[in-house]
Image (cartoon, rainbow, N blue to C red; front, side, top):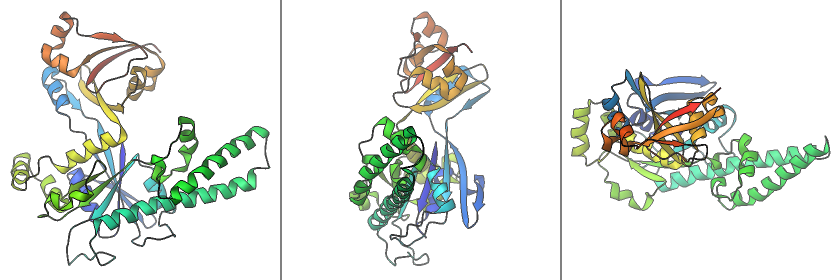
Length: 357
């Protein structure tokens, strides 16, 4: 799972990146011209994996992981000339979801480009940029289709006509401020749009980046399932602390759960992901898969050969295994099941895949 962190100048975007990845020193970076992207890989916290590691004592527990990309270079101007071009557009489009940072903190030493601190306005501006980017992309594609529609074999012209009809239908939605993720699209239509990298099609979260002493209820009207509150600088400092010290600071500032954990859990819900587990002699491992995925699809997350040669999945849910106290007792109670190709994997399932290649 790749999450791109995007924000305007002086929004505290890199501070949020540091808060969510624990250490700026752990990040790697690459550049393309004037564009720089900082990248860090973070383990997905899951107490169930910790419990399984204690039960089976593997050589190592392996967490599912999230990659955060801190994407620099976003222009502060908002307008028809969208800043998303070339390497910047490619860097943003390469992510599975976007984390849009809106500045809410006041710091006279770090001026806001618009000389005001208004997180609602910043969120609206970034949403507008996503829409404008996709409108420009559709305009360009429709121009190319118009130049190609009378050439080539009949089948190719038919495909172009279908694409043209879809893009022509979507463009007015963007003009009305409706993001493509909220449009009614079939699976075939989504597949048709897959190569465009439309930004308003991507799942996204907003982060209200507040000051150290700002109470969360101060921003309550802005907060919902797609927008959450984070004291970026404070959380970045806490992320550098030892666990005991961090716990004291979290309690002092009334933070129920550290920001890096909240962000990952939000991203999982946003992308519709669940976790399943595998147990081997050397490792206990957590995997992420789309909610509703079948057992063969989950097997494919582990290895494509497992999906191709899938026969059965032996499974038990984490809760039932914990109740039994161990795998041997679970077997003696008949709690393990054999599931076939149609089985929808549940969050917390432990799977052993039987396959033949």
